[in-house]
Image 1: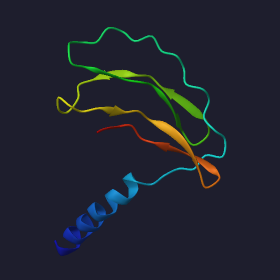
Image 2: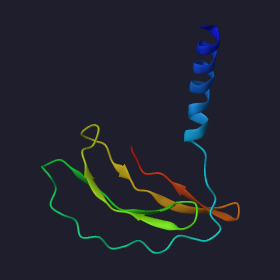
Image 3: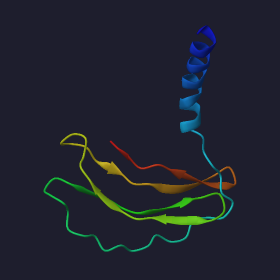
Length: 96
């Protein structure tokens, strides 16, 4: 039982590290695709624009979507790529 508890604790300790790992890509991302936004599902939704992600071999387009903000004054900061340390890094979108 102690071994299982220790293994679970170790696994949960490593989770945050995996979630902040960044991938550096040598080739910059393609230009964003211009998307046609469908109408929002209901009032109060915010459009989350699409972006290119790296799948390990090439850039893949992730289409935009509508999402409900977590609170009334939340602002969406979109996904974007930045050039750092000789490579390109995706900065994940987030609510601010």
